[in-house]
Length: 93
Image (cartoon, rainbow, N blue to C red; front, top):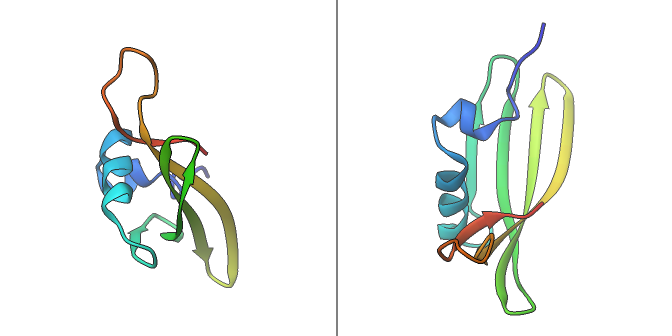
């Protein structure tokens, strides 16, 4: 059986750009949560750091299924994803 529980976009009904904008609006310690078919997820903003000219937010995503947990780091930055794009929050990692 295959589930997409870790896909925030799938579980929350948001686009990739909408998730990035949501994360960009969160303060340190605030979270985005969701519940999938078999597990729950929490994305938490753990810090705000500049990287070069970019404003960035480090995040931690924790997935929980029963007693098991999986954790991964992430990074969202405000800027252009390419030369012709508008400035916006973008998932980098």
